[in-house]
Length: 349
Image (cartoon, rainbow, N blue to C red; front, side, top):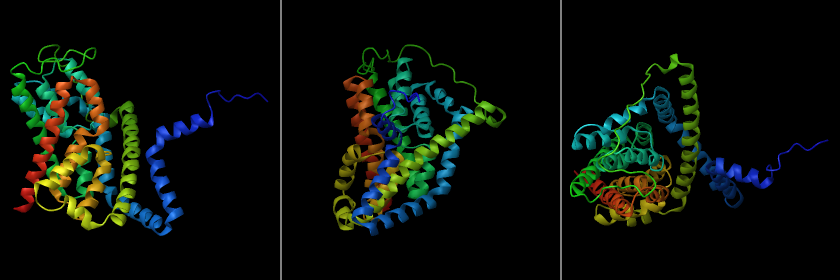
């Protein structure tokens, strides 16, 4: 019998493919397997906790999946381009709003940012969109409401808009002196305030179900979003169960509790390396707040981590010149700290 197995099909290639495509699921399974070997009681408790948490968030999860799939099928995300036309301050406000409504993560927004800058969109408007986009979107709002509560979701939405407008205005004022011209690195594009005009957005088809191709796209987007959210939330809930079991509440209260500046500052700095994913971070912050973390510190952690997570920071560094990268980091961290402080003051009222 002739061996028709491709030469590239080896155990190593199978393991590599499985790890690349399913590493988050494998990480969750590995944690539970290790727990089952060394602490079977905790393994069972973590599994039950994860299943219960997924069941409780299922209504919000399904609605967020439907919204993400609808945006892709109708082409509603093409409306984002309209935020970058008009006067500078109007563009900044609309760009921050578009960022808060767009379904982009801190890494996923990078290609769009590169295209906008290459087309000559002012850096002030791009920065407003850039800072607001990873913090909040409609799906994130629903899941934040389900995992935490409505007040926190509203606060996070206002934080996204406020951070975007703050960053956009600062960049606008700095750009008036010519300090931030040509923000892209050499070979990537030629940004700045001149350049090409924004391409007209494609037509939005609100009744997408009348088009077979768009119906198929809705199904593909729904399945892709289900897998994405499912794997990250599963891992997050497993980690939350361990955090609640193993980290003493008094430790969290001592480090991140209270109403002072130190917990918010610490959460802002820790958010950069510790942030895994916007959806995975929600259960973790929820668990920390239950153990005594100040809500303001929790919001600062989510905002700082969402905008400046290590994968996103690396991508930004590769995209823009050092002075723009430095400004991006300063705006992100200072904005996150201010947002956490304001929310803490609001909680105290």
